[in-house]
Length: 330
Image (cartoon, rainbow, N blue to C red; front, side, top):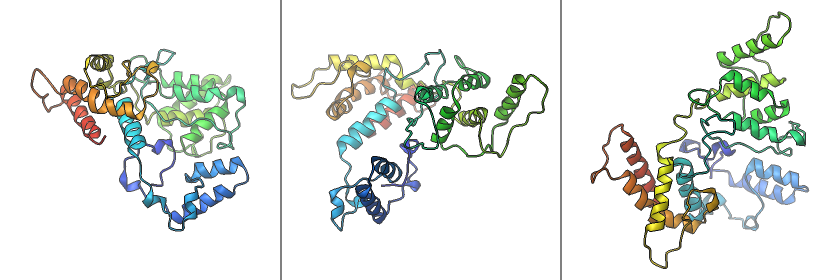
């Protein structure tokens, strides 16, 4: 059990940061959760310390950091196997590639949903809450390459939202409370747009070092963060997630003859209509159908193993080896 918090740390594999929690502190906050008088207090404790009350805390020797066992259903099948297939290999037809506005996506992000009980310092009226998701979506659009938009165009789109929504997104990303270390392209754009907007000639300077207080300040912070993320879509749609790969996997599912005792899986695997897969279906996929499909697709080149070089075939072979190593754990 580690001390990492937030969805942005969900897939942090840096083991040096996996620090064991203090069981005495866990007991203290679990008791505080039990004794809390309001739902808001309990939610705050759960969100901050990751603990709720359990009758197991009545046992003096109870230490969840040493006595909890993560079961294979949630950890491996519905956790790692699902993540490997959906997020790493991109075997998911529902994965977005182009926005409704026609811009390609450059990356995905584990965005936080707006919750007024958590973000108590940010006020957004109910009618403007949907703007949070629109801002988050726009920040994932490509800003270089084909079907992209410029920083100036992205600024304009963000500028169409209320300040509170922009402030929440910046807060959820844990961005700096001061306008420091802003990329020159962003500070220059800030000045250029301010001069364009002004009807008279004024000397405009970027407010370096000051806390953000206006809409354009929060936009500058968000665009500065955006420049630290992938800029084009070239690596977002990986070779493993091409439509023909999913098509072949579905053919394998439909044509493979299996014993009657083996549970079935959706023949339209990867399609939103297939619904949410259960742990047993992930087990069958990862031990039967996907090994057959992926090995014949990526592990065989005219009867020989793909070369170990920088070619696409070699890349797919590495993806196959990594995937099979994980599937062996099921």
